[in-house]
Length: 184
Image 1 (spheres, one colour):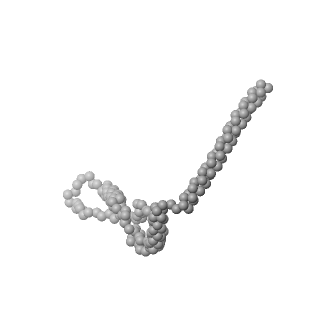
Image 2 (cartoon, one colour):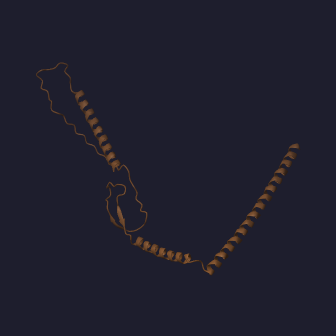
Image 3 (cartoon, rainbow, N blue to C red):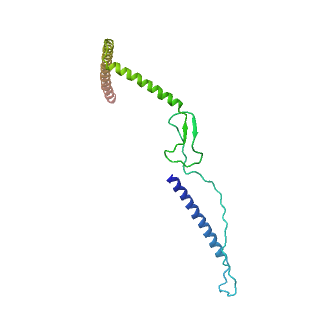
């Protein structure tokens, strides 16, 4: 709000300075164009009435800043609290969305919470034999997958070592061929 007020005051000051400069310059031109007689005539009448210059300007006032709004959630607008061109402040409520879909989500989350609390209570009572067997089978499967992954990694490492050896051998052969070519 203070920034908007400051920018409006700044625009007003600039406008006043420009108008004052224009009036001053036009007044100087009027005085310099008046004939000067060189000697003062005591019988001459002096016009001391203020002169008025009319300055007419046109223009367009543009906003200093614009803002594009984006809501954190999608929904239908129930009410709008501001109009286009209104000055707003941070935290001011601009519009209200229909919260029916949000209420449904809240109720669903509450139901999920109740189900999770029931599962927690059941697990806190201790594991059943079936759960223990299932967990042991999962651990055995994970161990087998780990061993397979380690075997694949070892095979890949052996391939890299073999490829490195082949590169070194090819480089050595290339050096020998280049030396023979230079001698020929």
